Length: 68
Image (tube, rainbow, N blue to C red):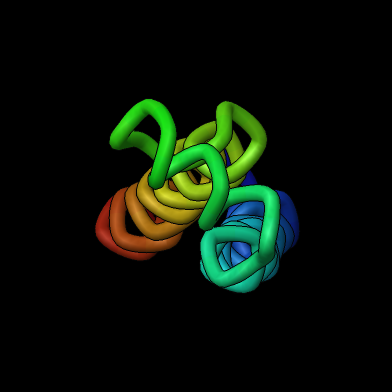
């Protein structure tokens, strides 16, 4: 994986986690937690997607620097 793509994935991952954390503090997520005991699906997908994108980006940066 090339370095610009890895950096972009790492940045996108951070942004998605940030939005996921903000979504977890929303009124809709509070209501969902009160009723079902879990945050909204949107919150979960933002956080999971952000973490996965960040891991792939970080792995691409680490792996790319070792092979060159």
